[in-house]
Length: 122
Image (cartoon, rainbow, N blue to C red; front, side, top):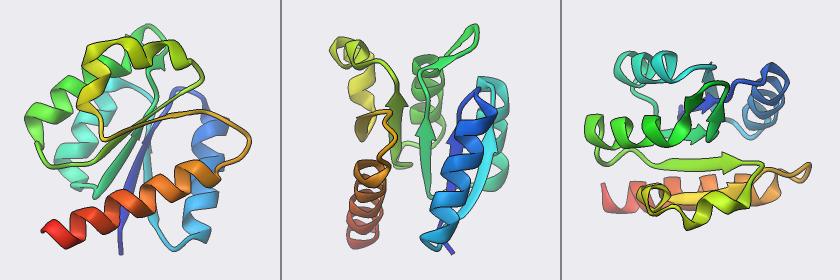
């Protein structure tokens, strides 16, 4: 079963995404901090990461850079309420950038696309 790591400091976002993605047939795990995310990537070896940029006092962009070094081929979707970060060249290391919305269809579609691409190239 495909394992997706959801990294967000907002508990309600983590719960919503987990419920929605489980209903799509994915196994979900979650983290609320950069440290927890990095440990989970190492321990759980997820197939994809959904990563918020603003994680309280921490930066999801820093986590993205560390994840990219730790697991080079792990797909990461940056999922932020702020579109302004698209202009930050460091966010280009992510496989996708989705602005948070009440409509999770674009996120789900991007997850399917990335996982399909990954399985084809693997």
